[in-house]
Length: 88
Image (tube, rainbow, N blue to C red; front, side, top):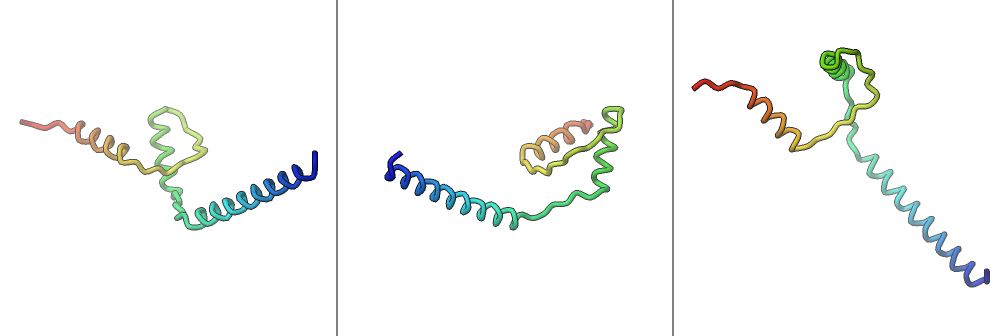
């Protein structure tokens, strides 16, 4: 490889390294500014009990992810409202 190509490759590698370092700093900043949501032990017990009642066996909860979704909330409300018998 001639010296010109080597210089181009080194310059490209340095540029990529600088990009990765910049991205790493941005990710660290974003992660530091994320609010920490903690799930209480009581909530985990309630979830575990509900799953055990549904499945008939004691579950082993490995991970819980908190999500927020308008469609999830809308579906939940629709299900609850549909379960009520209205008298006419």
